[in-house]
Length: 582
Image 1: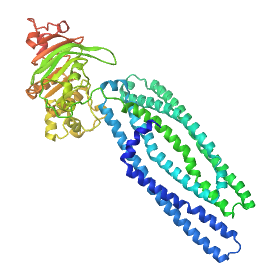
Image 2: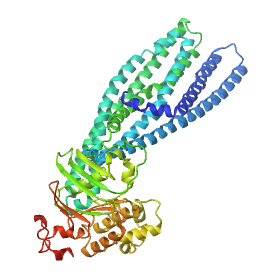
Image 3: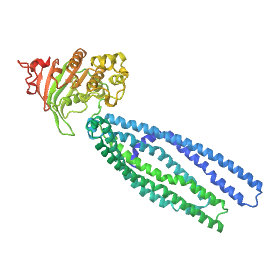
Image 4: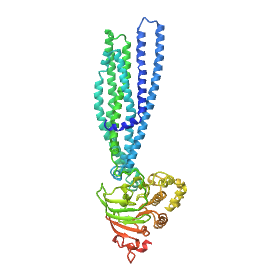
């Protein structure tokens, strides 16, 4: 139960609902006590031959009416109990899902390199659902069971202490059985949830990469892989179901044994005169059967608690992770756009690759920097450090003369328009994908941003134009169109810093020229960094750096880096002539 203690803060948050639910449960149980007493009185009246038949008939009618009334009241109160406690569990589920989602948002890039999407989805859906079963039905039935058991056993003890003792003899066996089976359920539930995460991850990857699967005609192979994973999941679920299935029959067996004890011992006591009338036996049988569902629910509740604990343990693994990148400056800090790298060295934790080595660089506000270099030379890493997706290992990245770690993290990112190398679009309208950069933007501003990104003419050709709903990851659009929509999304943000990470690789030369021309006008007062494999993207930049193996090997303006024959001095670009740059 240690893992589930994390949820106590939610019980405190909804303490009034919780307390009201307990009070309603207590009151409901007192009304349920009337039925066995009324039945016992009725049998006693039937047994009493001295009573007039009309008196017996009248007494029976009164008791029947009272049974109906008390049952209706108890039923209504039970409904209110469910409305209070089950609704509370839905509120807790909502809060917990939001907490997990916020944690996912705060966790760093390294976390997402180590964990797979399917597993993350399973924990926020399946695992949180299991936890809700604990804070809702499990808690409700536990309270109901405890209160009913206490109320009924006290009433039974008042009537006959000896018969109560005999009728409750099977309970120690029940308690031991629950303990043993619950331990096994906890183990099997954990392994099942882990396997379910693997299955979710596999299916998520297959659906996302369906085009590749079809292109390589490997549907049958992937079907076999899925079948194997499904079979493994089925086997583990069946093992869990078998453990759960032991509870019901065991409960019924023990309750039946209690009834037999009541009939035999109660009968002998009646014969011996230890109990006054046979109606007491009927009362005890009804009391024992009133305990049937609460006692039987112990197994179900125990199963839910064990599954919830296994799920909460998986959730806590993520909730307890401290984000590597944290906002340590709560107050707002201004961002103008001057960027400085001072002896920056950065090594990726997961691969131990040193992507940048002793980089020194200054970009003044309003300047445009172009970064060229081979794949893996550290270009994208440099942009990631500016947007503080990672923190440097050595040296410092400064914005406006202040270490980026001494600035408000959200202010830094809010003042950066970023176009990633892999253009990611959401399953929403084109308009909303562009407005993602500025949710308050008008339709005119959306169209203007699209025109600057040279994608407006493509959009208006769609049947629904800007209201066209894209498929998953923007699959409706071509690679070049996705890149240009991503550029429009960054432009509409109108941030003082603009980072373009090789975002023109999928467009033709003519379109690239048009976009770069528009960017020259748009970025006059903005600090702009363009990462590209194409030298043509860099020719109008204020300064150019060439990266190789994490180091700056060439730095200067376009004219400074081109020799008399029109070739770049760096060997990597020696085949690119001045004509190709025009």
